[in-house]
Image 1 (cartoon, rainbow, N blue to C red):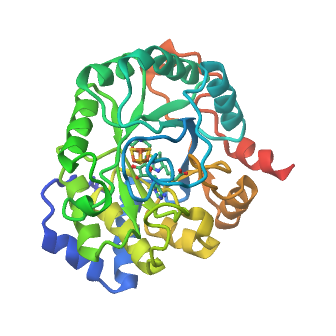
Image 2: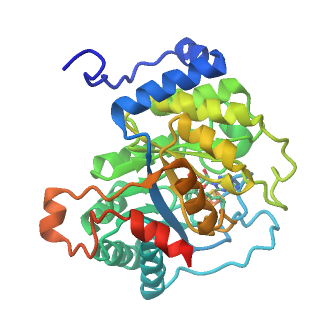
Length: 351
Ligand code: SAM
Ligand code: DTB
Ligand code: SF4
């Protein structure tokens, strides 16, 4: 193995000045660095595809200033109680039919109640039986709750730090940054893969984007999945009138995430609906290699499937197939696990 192909070690000791220096590089140099690292760890023409479903919508007691689901802001959202398992599975089947390999279920909760765990774990089992990867985002988790989800076979838990420790208090006051880190530790301890990222464009400074990425990159283990959301400005929320972020600064944030956490999937998450195809392409060049696919995020719109598949086709991007693990192959009933879903993904939208 020569030096160019030897695996790069993952670092957990990034300094602030190193991350600042990456952000400050000329754009072409930053993109080159990010591309180089990306190609050491991933096929640059492959993007992982996840679909989101809100399984419990609105009336959340938390005060996250960006969020349409907080009970404190009048956003005109129609609240919905926890969905029935069969309805969730119907959505998962539909997502699978479009070529999505991971199904992410989100609930507008501060944290789940123990009495809901039976239904939640049934959802995990049911989606896994469809041969899809599972992800949930339900708010803060206690160790025993993380354990119950792990036993049901949950693959990923999403819990974002959202921003830097310094800017955090400007955005959320009802739970602390440390509580977020505690939940992440509980998820890791239970053996579930971590999906953790944040939001940019909330009025934070570059320093805060640096602080957010440093916090993630210097965790004892990098999150396997790092969603970078561009704020979706929702009328009625305190951030509805937030100024636009320079799109190149968004691309830089993706590129620095890629360099600091080279083996993680970096997800181009919320905010794609307002982005041009060209801007999204720049983020793929910067190392983004996962998206949310399907016409809805949790409560806000996402690009039409036909637009996404069209973009993939124009760029020669393939949706990533599921990586099947040995034990999955034995235990699960993988209806189409590991099938190369390119054809399915493309065909579904030609109609
Ligand atoms: N209630 C749970 C929680 O907060 O942990 C789970 C659902 S919550 C909606 C998941 C994440 O979605 C948030 O942490 C935030 O990063 C992202 N999010 C919510 N509203 C957003 C918006 N308007 N724009 C961008 N990202 C948003
Ligand atoms: C994440 O980082 N982004 C997703 C997912 N994790 C749960 C949620 C985005 C939500 C955008 C606003 C909405 O649709 O309600
Ligand atoms: Fe509630 Fe999550 Fe929205 Fe915050 S981000 S208000 S915790 S649903």
